[in-house]
Image (cartoon, rainbow over all chains, first blue to last red; front, side, top):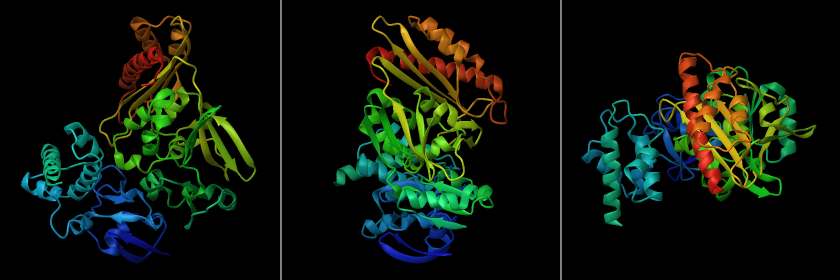
Length: 159
Length: 288
């Protein structure tokens, strides 16, 4: 076992890990932050997406031991960053029913948040490309895209 | 299983020598982690090579140099690979529509996998060389020689890929890339890359037509017949169609994903599409 320290949503966590343990597994099972979902665990579904040093990555394809020293942001941090209030993206997903079972939602919101931080006024095509690696098993894509576009409009109006 | 994160090349080489075939150098870790269950019993040492200063893109008199641990999104965003003579690299990255994987996967990993990935197809069309390092020294190998077979490359135990080099293409050269896949997250069923060079009179002086992911050999292959059809000819739509039809000399694999017949058809369609793009770009002196 290797002792490592992970910085997740500005908090530091000491954990013991094996080299092949994925970041997704460690965050869920050892740190206890279960907002990040694990679906396929082989990089095809997108539900484990989180921000690593500001970039969206699949945490199931990242070794936890290789995430030391990185700034990790999960879905739990999205609300914390927004002073405990729901982020406009989360509000939009609620308002526009951008989910059915909700399993893909954390990954979708992380990917969308990264998009809107870099492109506040995306086209529908750009939104679809940003969630290109994310599967929604309920097939709610149309409402997800609508939620992200509406959140973008709300965020532009508020800034 | 041991984990190492060496900070200089000699340290990395010593570890590779120590563990031999039981070591796996990783950077983006997308392939290793995606196959960790299968690889678990085979790997004794995971060697993270991200701290070795191998993330760079630079150009000199020899052409373009891309460090092994440069990520696909770094290639997509970089001025030298986003447009101009090497813009085909960004076009190739763009066809992998998973931002999260593009943030992790590296060009070194893409060339080492020798499986259904896109970059080696483009690199073969651009006559790329692979720079290989080990404790016994540094050697170069062409992309064509580097892949031996499906999931099999020419690295010896103790060696790793340091850099990918692309020679500077002549003026009036254009490239094209095309791909078929089921969804954005799927592996390619067919990918093709083309490169055309024209002289001032519009005659084709050099051509590369490459198909990957679909081949019976499991590695990207050039279509000699398609290239021969283009060489020394004035290119037009009919010639592009004839060259695409000639690509039937590439034997395609028949597997549970798609039949060989459909793959051959898609190789032909993809090559026609990629040749049109390459031709248009060559006439404008730019890649697309």
